[in-house]
Image (cartoon, rainbow, N blue to C red; front, side, top):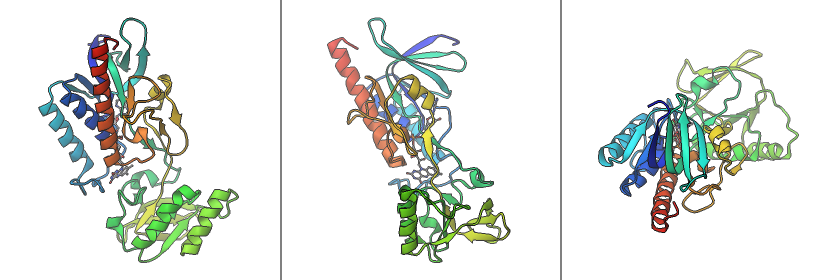
Length: 323
Ligand SMILES: Cc1cc2nc3c(=O)[nH]c(=O)nc-3n(C[C@H](O)[C@H](O)[C@H](O)COP(=O)(O)OP(=O)(O)OC[C@H]3O[C@@H](n4cnc5c(N)ncnc54)[C@H](O)[C@@H]3O)c2cc1C
């Protein structure tokens, strides 16, 4: 299939809850869909997802596999292609504007609409053991994780801004043995936002530990995380809350298409319509990459909107002959 060009009504980049929902909507509209999945998921390695009605506590791999099987079994216009897309173009020359995407083997797929459901990924702080405990002791969102770990000592890593304060305050109801902010050596902050966050947390009853962290590991004496300090000594916590910066996984595709984005630690592609169309006509966005509310239920909902939006636009294009 090298350099051949297969054409579809819609190209959907992403096989997570957003992309799968978008593909389902398009399948139900009898549209041909190429659904691309590089198999890199944000909640990779997590054994249980929460706060998803009817799926609370389900393994995310199982959830994705079941959803993919369901849409492929029921809607024969959907093709799942397990490959990484490395290029995306909007072609305006010729009678029909279209999108073309390509993988690293030079295969090209063409589509009248494009849906980016490519998700986000976190940039981890440079602390030994952090990556290994991500999603397994280190908690980034109390709605996703945390309730099951209630009852012990809660650690907060950082607290550098007001953005991190909400989860800190919420964690008091989960922490029977108190809340400690581990600043990793950053004992004083000059930034007003960070100062305010620390003052509010302290007034609520948080303790502060300013020792430099040497490493993080599983607590060998029980559940949770062991924080080892550079000067010696350690502290065990039942969970360690930490919200690192998230960036778009397909940032290069987003920038090559010239889409308007909201920057910042929780950045996303800006939607210009209720159906999640971007600043580029015919290009839709869904899931984590379309919103600061990066959770599965929102990914499903926005995926449905983008899929429905693309299907409606295709019908209008067909009627007007404009495509
Ligand atoms: C540790 C952790 C635990 C979490 N737990 C929960 C929870 O309990 N409950 C909850 O609601 N949310 C949870 N979340 C958030 C949840 O994982 C995301 O909100 C959700 O996965 C977003 O779905 P998505 O489809 O937008 O992106 P993803 O699930 O990340 O899927 C992105 C898809 O795009 C594909 N992709 C990306 N780039 C390309 C490319 N160039 N070519 C081809 N394919 C590409 C990927 O391979 C993947 O298939 C958790 C997140 C983390 C980090």
